[in-house]
Length: 143
Image (cartoon, rainbow, N blue to C red; front, side, top):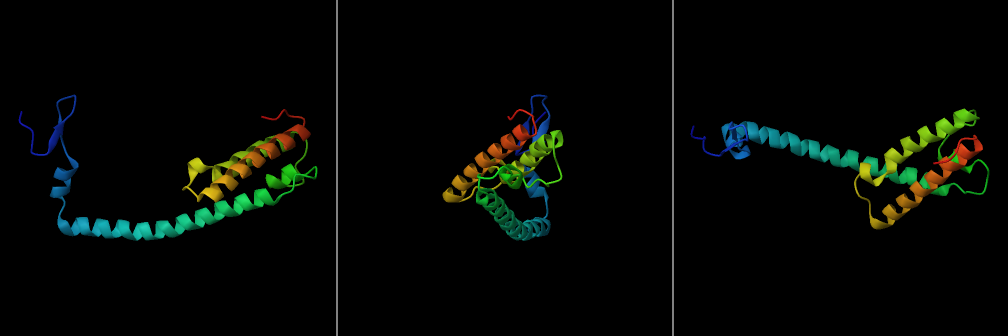
């Protein structure tokens, strides 16, 4: 069977219209409205994105500010409550590590300027050391 103009056929022989062919069937006022809506979303997304970046930079600064000189520095980096002790603190350290790492890790956010990316890598390394320290204090082997 002949294919419609702009259609592609799949391995099953079914004619699938191209994006251009589908776009041509959408009335111009609808396309304009969709484009305007996505442009509005883009502006608010940019603001939300800036807020996320600011939150990431704040988390990185909090981690790097903690001095590794006291016995409780790991708990401070992981933002653990002082009431959690024993084996529970090892599990809490693992959970806190995952939560913070998910927020600041480069794979889950926009790229930062090079200097901030370097600080992020330092913060992640410190976060890993903190997790190991708390888990060792809890009697659970570090990762």
